[in-house]
Image 1 (tube, rainbow, N blue to C red):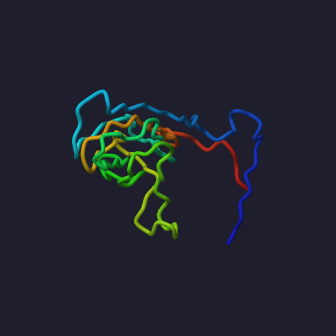
Image 2 (image 1 turned 135 degrees about the horizontal axis):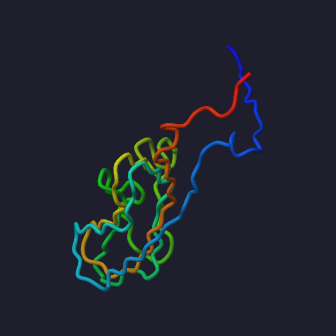
Image 3 (image 1 turned 180 degrees about the vertical axis):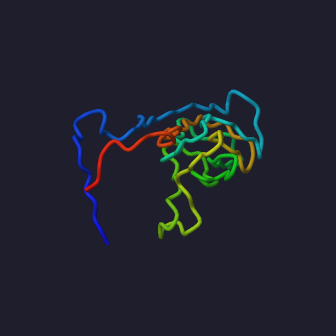
Length: 157
């Protein structure tokens, strides 16, 4: 087995790895401003193709006062509760699902998402109308075009 070391001047732009900034995005959904019911989906944040969602969650700004024990899930088109699973909207941060294999959650949870195609981060009402005010947030990393036509800029010895 061989070990190769990167050589070249890492302080020059020509030899630095290609990369794009990571960004945190958020959106407020105020359920008291529109009629809603169990099963409704609010497509909160658009996620472009070739994006990695490192983390997503929700912060309940105003607790649900509708009195019907409504719950919210946070997910996407492939998994309605990829990030938060059927949580009662009480004031504060909701528990985000752990990464797969975390002993506190089990082996089927996700906690992050890789989007090869464009999708949306969605809030889903699971059990009845609510009137909570919620801030949905996620940390997105764009990897579109990274490495597709790049050439090696350093050598290995």
